[in-house]
Image (cartoon, rainbow over all chains, first blue to last red; front, side):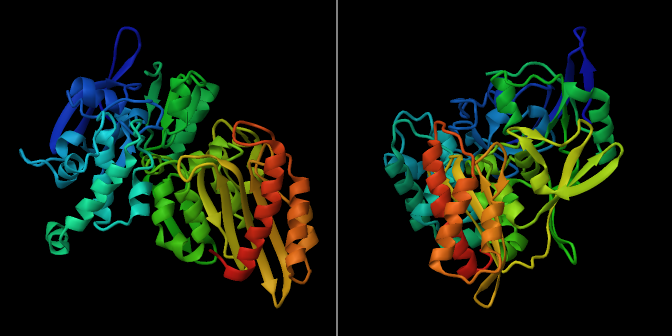
Length: 174
Length: 289
């Protein structure tokens, strides 16, 4: 169990360490602190958005141990010791990831609020399955709602990445 | 949206978990994946003083085949663990498919099978197919463990027989004498939709005759139910289109659905009539899918 400190009101505070985008961060959280709030408020990683906060919209999607999850419904303390990737960790160095490039080039961003979550879901799909069909793309982003209803271009962008992915590259990256 | 304060414990063992549950009694709730309880706490429907997290109980996260016992699903397996399990894909694809058709990918990576069953929502997708396959569950408490049929778990909407100091640890799908099974979910969208109704069947066919049939229906009554009259009607009968259609009519008559935002009771009864026939047809002709 992580270190516990009880304050004068009897509220417990816990020391947790999470690895976010490759760096370890140690923070003191309350049991009721949500992971999305640690990322946004404590680590200033505001690329992860809060939309419905009920697990319906997917704006808060992050990778937890390489799997897309809604960070609005996970307690920070439950993520203690785990590896997290947020939208800020998708681009390597100063270059955008090819999923990000494809979103820009295919007009897949309208208001942009769903985009970080959308890209995380798309990235997770393409890592697992570099050449998905349209049905698989739609299924992978079914938990990410775009209220501008720009799904056609989002699907197009993800399929474009698949088209431009050279299989040799995929294998060498693994 | 923030959560009220609560105390949090993550015991290292099953025994400690049950002891903690006994110590805190009604004040405590179990935290598994949290996809249901966290939302209920955000909206004020639940405000437990203590959450007991199961995250350290690694033994409950596995899906194995155990010879002479069957497929053993640890209660903390996520829905996507069911979707990706080779054991389930090979033996009971319907169980994987039922998990696959739930919620969204993000939620399937967090939500657990045990949580889905213990929440006892009448429209849950996993109970019908697991009940049709005769699944048993194991409940472990401070005074020992008990094994029972999954269909005996539910007592009403969000109500089960689980005692305050007990947790559900595993689900076992026994080796089948049945020859075919499947689950048909009718939802209003392809993703993120609860079942308007869900029908699972398991049949044993010998020659052209049904020797045994099990029909389990979700969202048709306060708990998942067996259509026992339809099952009895099918037993020993020669398979024909009319027979399966009649079984659908009987199953529909046995159901007690309600009208709600997803569909009227009349609509649900008609769905049950049609989908029971289709599920039977598929189980007879395609085996365990």
